[in-house]
Image (cartoon, rainbow, N blue to C red; front, side, top):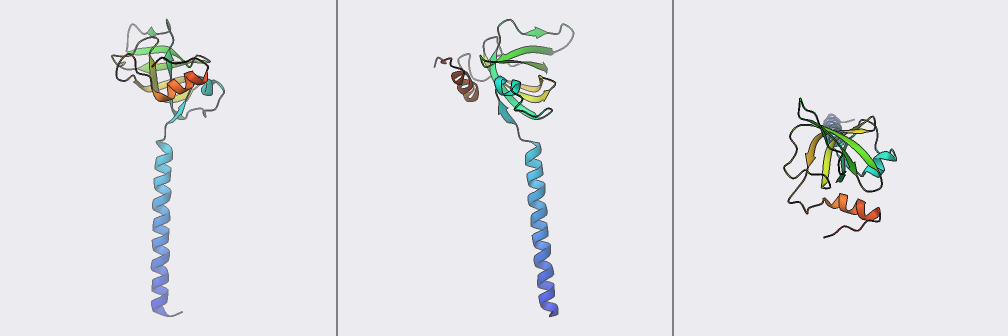
Length: 145
């Protein structure tokens, strides 16, 4: 093979290897940071892998909020009106967090409980995240606008 062709072939192979490495690292990073949305029914049906980062949404069950007297730890039940899951959270809850309110919790699914890093309640008391609204409507309960 001619030396100039050999150099071109080496450069092309190095370029392809570099592009492949960049794509592989980018896909690995994206896979590690993805948060898939699940409803309580999907979690109870074991559709989410154990230990996976997830988002779960639903309504905070009336009378389920348990606050620790010595810390910021809170435990509450979240329901899509079919199934209920427990959420453990340590931190300051949003001002609009209330029983009966639609929320989204970001965290990990571990041992049948969501270990939340973040709890989101948005806008005003009438707001409901679109995923939560569709899950409740699928359960056969119409949501008031």
